Amino acid sequence: MTILIIGGTRGTGKICVEQLLAQGKQVRLAARNAEKARKLFGDRVEHVVVDLAHPDGALKRAFDGVEQVVFTAAVGAGPAKESEVRAVDFEGVVATVTAAEEAGFTGRFVYMTTTGVHHRSAFMGFLNFIKGDLSGWRARAEQAITEGGLDYVIVRAGALTNGAGGQALQITAGDRPLTFGTWVNRSDVAAVILERLFASDALPRDISVVHA
Ligand SMILES: NC(=O)c1ccc[n+]([C@@H]2O[C@H](COP(=O)([O-])OP(=O)(O)OC[C@H]3O[C@@H](n4cnc5c(N)ncnc54)[C@H](OP(=O)(O)O)[C@@H]3O)[C@@H](O)[C@H]2O)c1
Image (cartoon, rainbow, N blue to C red; front, side):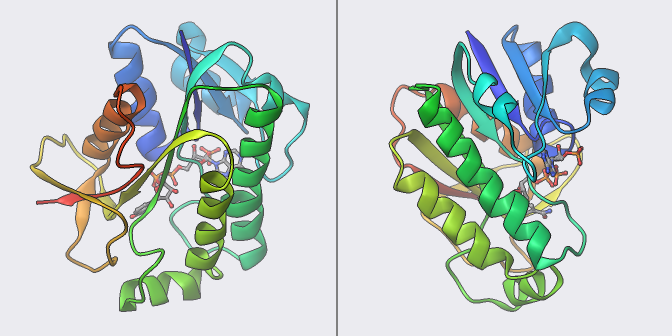
């Protein structure tokens, strides 16, 4: 059983890889920077080079023999031009969904995004300002997933923090506004992602995860 991680060289995706390896799972890591991926995980994972801003045939091949997929990739935490947000956070998702369908992938696809994509808030307004229309492109990315034929789960996280995790969580169905108080640890989100990846019941397909 191979699990494909897209976005596993940083942040929550990297923790997902570490948690999966600790569970003895077989992981394939799709990363744009092969050297960085190798430095992080060496031969403990299979490597495939995929740049979501310039997807090619490697993206479809990445799905060969894969049973589940975790997608946490995004332009990153700092400011970004709208063209970059569109290329990675929207078109990269569309290309991934298309590649999955073309590859005949029938497993579960867990997509990580932020809370507040469907709500107006000062925090999301700020994010949209520094990362060209982030919520608009994320909403379109979700649409590509929900209207495709995949067995998907959308995991929405509040503002992300680092550290050991193990905090009590509030997990609710659907989207909730992104506010300055709604934070959550990346390790805890990774654990929720993996729980949803393997749960026999995928419902609800759309959850928000924040610190209790
Ligand atoms: N920051 C927050 O507070 C926050 C809150 C809620 C939700 N989120 C969302 O949660 C998700 C995970 O966030 P995170 O902060 O844990 O992860 P992250 O540190 O932003 O990591 C993003 C990953 O995406 C990869 N990536 C970026 N551009 C790529 C491209 N063109 N092709 C292939 N891979 C690419 C990065 O690879 P490299 O290592 O090569 O850069 C990295 O592995 C993102 O969607 C993020 O927007 C963030």
